[in-house]
Image (cartoon, rainbow, N blue to C red; front, side, top):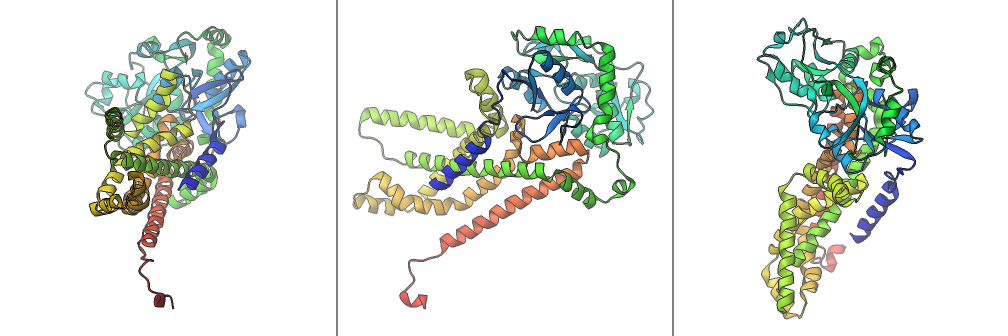
Length: 517
């Protein structure tokens, strides 16, 4: 087990150390979703002036990317895109993971309390996107959407506009616009509020959609419709950003946006055969075009879950051995032992009582913001999964130790074994066999739970699949592939562990010599 652990750790070190080592002196780290076309999107090549996405073999392009290139050039730096979920952009900025946010973000009053903003580099217009066959497709005013199920993106001003529609059914906010497009196509919602460029992209990608721009529409504040660059408070480079944007007039902004809209990967024309192809033909096409990204995501998922489970098991074994140790005879050592036991109890309760997604945000962004410790996101993911698993495994190991007959402890004591010798030579071999099914279950859970690590932009299987879905606009087909891959992984792991269990159950010590003949 020790050899396996150190081999895996060395592999992680060699593969991932340096992924996030771009120096601030050479690069300008730009945070964006890379999934909000035409402002920003992900593509597989550097075609049309795309910029490399940190830690991946993919590239980002779009209106925001081109603006980022202008700003970086004016500062004599190279742009580097750090792909980050919308909810993680502000924490990534304040914790120093990125230098600025260029992601179609509005300088609202709430955001200004946390970060600073440059001058605007675009002015948006809120519109509604509906299905062409919907009764709302002919809407002329907000009142025409009375009774409609409407939503928008979580954490943006667009969601707050829904309340201006009389008698509206305000649905729960969604994580990104790709989810909204899928919900609209599936009749889960009747409309979603977006910005004009995104609405144009959606209607081009899905001819069944229609964008509704109302003459007497939403009442919006100027700070809501303005799009600006987000920076840390006190960052003196904001004057350089504003100087660069001063040479980017409205006429050029509109021209750039009109130029970027038709360049999106989703806008590639499909031939009639592709349009009429069946579900599994579409699935096969997605696999053919994106298998490298999916394989890499699968590899990261396996790497994190394997090392996380092994390290978690070791943590659980160590805690289990410590918690069953006899009380020290020295009063000082006894109190230290008790205090350390309390600390272990706090660790176990905290990590068993909070979701991994919250732990990921606190550890990855919190350590950088509070202590200035910048962790590589892949190594951070392994650490998060390991300590989370360790909290659960400590209780599983404790149960495994209690399952060993007390008479064996007494016999070991009578033979003069120390507590460490008793655990190492007698108890733990039995415990490992007893807890093997539960350990396998933790492994399977870890494979699936790595998907929550997309909140810190770890490029695991779910993150890779979601990127493909936003590129192809074929959400059901893409996530069908992801579901199959997850099932293959968990099914294979389960079968392997069953074989290991059967191997360990074989009684090789009671065979007589004649049995070998």
